[in-house]
Image (cartoon, rainbow, N blue to C red; front, side, top):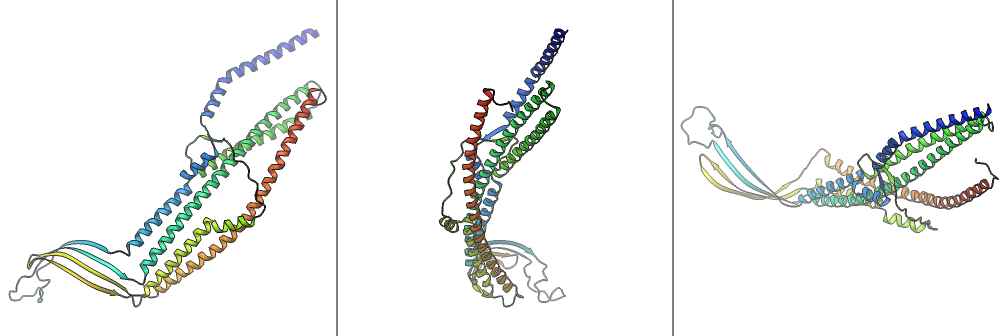
Length: 412
């Protein structure tokens, strides 16, 4: 009877094993095809590729290039105000015969006929010789603004490189955490099965099974969170690099060697203040604002210009003949309701605002530099201690494996 019972249990176990094998055989093609599809939509990307993509496709960098193009166009417009301006015009007019008559349309004795049709074509030139230096200062302001735009472009390029580098390492860390979470979930699943088997064999309690199941569920939660964090890191890297497409990103490739932090922050802080693109951009903006303030003062001075025209005028009465005109002109806004003074005050306030921004940026740069140096030293020390912890954990694992091989440790 005992042999029959053992044979029945063995047959039942074999049937269960056969069902599992058949299910795996049926699911294997779909699993392989699904893995191949996921692998086909995944793109490996290196740190150098991230930096190169950010330099070409970053939306922030593209916006700065557009602003620089606008500054270049503004500089051309300001420079054109210093040069002569030539215009051409043409007109054809008709009028009633009585319009130019001294008697109007009232009855009168017959008078010589006046013209009723007129055609005119003329070329006019105008060159402002003096306008209170508004043109020169406006041109100087646009040149400084153009230099500030170039500095902003360099600053945006550096920011794009920094963001791409941070995004790459964030994705790399998320990938590693996701891998560890998957392995932990697999180990907890195996441990739960082991606890169930021990409980069924009478070598464990159901409480151990419940604990193992709770640990497995916690590991599953951590795995899902790590997977979502990896997807978010990939989306952030795609955003900072400007990369379009739907394929998943995977950080791969060699990493730069760690650089130890300097012992003295003084030279580095002085160099940062001296070579900061942000401070240089603000200084150029201050220079442009000062030039604009000087240009706004030109409204209090007269404008002197030379003008000339040459054209052809034809009438139905009196014939057709060329004509020309040349002269010097002066125009002075004696009263403009305070608009000129308000414009000058606004420009001066803009200068003071930029000077305050420059001082605040210098203080912020120094504070951020100190904070970054502290984080650099902390990370360098943490990396050293982590390497030691990894070696200690590896030795502990090897010792536990050796003890298990000799029967002096459990499978846990």
